[in-house]
Image (cartoon, rainbow, N blue to C red; front, top):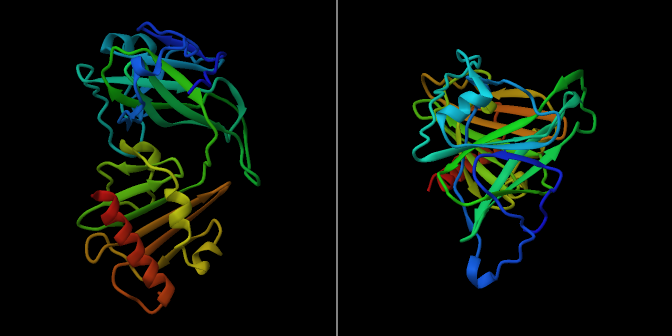
Length: 287
C-alpha cells in the first residue's frame, strides 16, 4: 500500500496526509474493502477543463460537481439518471491526462480502507496488440461512487489484466455481470437490445480475484476460435423464450455470442453445456 504515485495531482476538497507517514499498524488497523459503484458521468456531464496531466477529483457536493462539470441532456443510448445523493455518497474521478491516440484507458479496480485512510487502487492501459488506433486527442477517465467519508483518500497504481468476460441472461429478467481478474461487476437495469453498451450502465463492484481466468476455462473451443466475431445460436427472442449472452474481450478482439434458451440444432453438446455454465455462474454471482 506504500506505492503512492507522487506525480498524481490530487485535486479534492478534504485534507490528506502522505502514505509515507508510518502510522503504527495497531493504530490504523487492517485494511477492509470499501464498496463502490460505477457511475457513467459523461452521459450527462462534460468536464469544463480537461486535466493535461494525471489527476484525481473527489466531489462531495452538488456545488463542487457544478464547479468542474456542465450538465447536459443524456447523450448515451442508455437512459441514465444524473442524480447523485451527496448526503450518502462521494464521486471519485480519476484521469490519465492527455493522450494523442485512441486505445488508452484508466480503471478503478478496488478501494480499501483502514482506521486512518482510504486507498483507491487503479490501473492504466494503452493500445492492445493488433488494435487499430486513430490519432485523436483524448483524456481517459473513470468515475465511481463511494460512501461518504471523512478519511483522507490516496491513489495507488497497480498492474492488472484488462481482458474480461461479460455474461448475461435476457428475456423477462435481465442479469448481466462482467468478470475481471480483480473484481466482478453487476450491471444495473440492463434493457434488451441487440447491441449492449455496458460502458453506459451503472454497476456495483465486488472485489474477488481470478474470476475471468477461472471462467475462461469453461469456454468451448468452437467459441474461442471465433476470435472477434459475433454469432447467434438459434433465434433468441427477449419477448418470448429469451437467451444467454456471452462476450469475450481479449486484447483488441471482442467476441459476442447469443444463445437461444431453447436447445436448437446448431447448438453442439459443448455449447449447450456452456449455456448451462453461464446460467449457473449467474446464480452464484447473484447470491
